[in-house]
Image 1 (cartoon, rainbow, N blue to C red):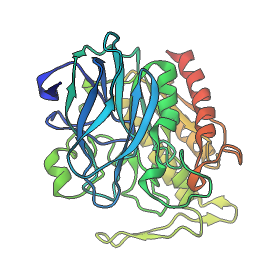
Image 2 (cartoon, rainbow, N blue to C red; image 1 turned 60 degrees about the vertical axis):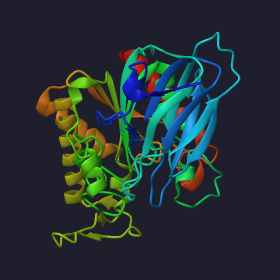
Image 3 (cartoon, helix red, strand yellow; image 1 turned 180 degrees about the vertical axis):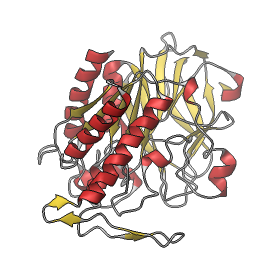
Length: 368
């Protein structure tokens, strides 16, 4: 057996936004992974999952199939990926972060230090396409695993490998990156926080965490879009902007500015001022996406948890298209979750993600 640090080889690929540091490699976003091709009978990975409250889970994909899933301890440890395989045959391996970037836990991340194997690391074949996914808890695969009776908001009920981004990427043979956060929106979060919105952090590597740990690690630094350009961007935002209108969801007072925010309803309809603010935020986010990804098709995929915000999304797309002349942006309706396809925590389950993936994959195949 020999031990190899990631700084000692180029025979691997990293999926997901991260810093240039490779000792250790830090995986941040959901679906982020270390992608390998090995020729050996036994493979181990040295990793740690620091956290204060919300732990990491990983999945091991072997030749395209998920073979295991487990929690990662806080301490640095060696974990066996497989053993006793036929060493004459190459094996494609992905070590996948199953949970989202936990913005409520400033210590949360997944670190990979090195590999131990009784064979060789081989060059990793690049996938045919590149896709970026942007969203909220649905894209983070909250509730995609677990019984429908489960209500706890904990890490074990996130499972990226049961999500539509994972399914679409496999069907399209695509390398991909995910930027998503439970409860967040385009203009406001489910609980009316204007700072908990994806556009605010989209141009950073992973700026969700406040504090010294994240800043020193470089997570707040600007993301280099030039080094990875997607052919398609799939956006699934708007559910939490809609949720902020619910009477049962609280208003929010910013402790720094004193401003109180609460989306309002006028009878059965959105308050028009609030709705227009959301529409403007969506339009401006499309401008940001196009500035940083000049050649990508942009699909705003919506409807898996109802489509009440759909008309506003369509209006934002129409407004953006009229202003810019950009016709490579469209609204894509995806199937709503049903009683048969619901998962844990009243979120889409595996069946709902599969239905969404089928619709999105079909459209992507028509585009690229």
